[in-house]
Length: 358
Image 1 (tube, helix red, strand yellow):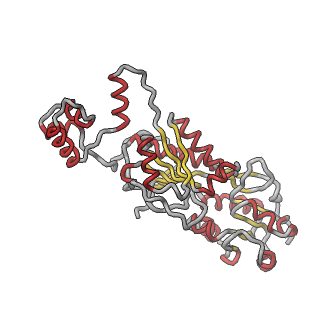
Image 2 (cartoon, one colour; image 1 turned 30 degrees about the vertical axis):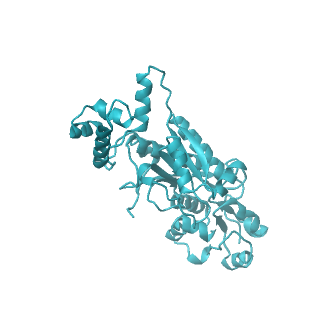
Image 3 (tube, one colour; image 1 turned 90 degrees about the vertical axis):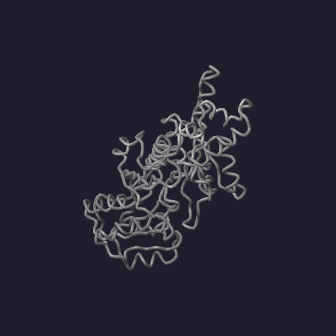
């Protein structure tokens, strides 16, 4: 798999709308007409099954087009039809967002992370003048059913939202006919463009804050499944700051079993966790030393740490998809783009200004 190309949000704004040299090139209507020896209008009518075109000639035109790799652009065809009929043109391209059932349940319950992704996709689509339809990957939504829906609605741009498990696999759609982008870091195949939070930078930002405040013995609470989905970015940054691996607690799930005795052994002066819910699992006497979350849910809440700017990450995915559509780029890109979004520090109330005596 090719390594993704990393760009910043600022640099990316200069890229939207520019054609990609790696885009797939197809034959034009003019080339088909010249190859068959007919006019471009005749080729166009052949695809519309115009009765004025003889069956033998139509078959020859369609075969030549297939051999050359030409297919009419549905969007252009609709626009030209409306133009010819002198009716007002009201075309709005629509994207599809594919959701895993657990994530969609989070949207319906207004869960912070999931709801922020939804809001970001809605806002990003509106900014670019696109519509967006949302589909939940329930068992009855087989790849065939999904493709039939996309084709019926003339949807050629797809956003795949992040799953809640590292075991999730992307549906086997006809990706060669679609422009596709991932949101988040969980999915790796196929190697589409991706917009995600910079988890390594989030940890580095948190550790820098702690160092400036005089904290020197942090520990890290981190679910192993989440760590795998983030390619160990949190632990990599933690170790890069010369903190020992023994100060990382990685259970399969967020749980209190064994945590108290481990904290007593490690004796940290501050606790870093992958998300807010860890706070309630930590003994009060220990968490009062200082608690910092790398996934703050509520920017106006009491938890100190990093708000991952999830809505901005989702808007970035729409930016990437618009770029791919304007470049007529479909299938798996030769050089996937990785768009990283930085988190925002939240002061909160769970981190003392200076370390408490341990």
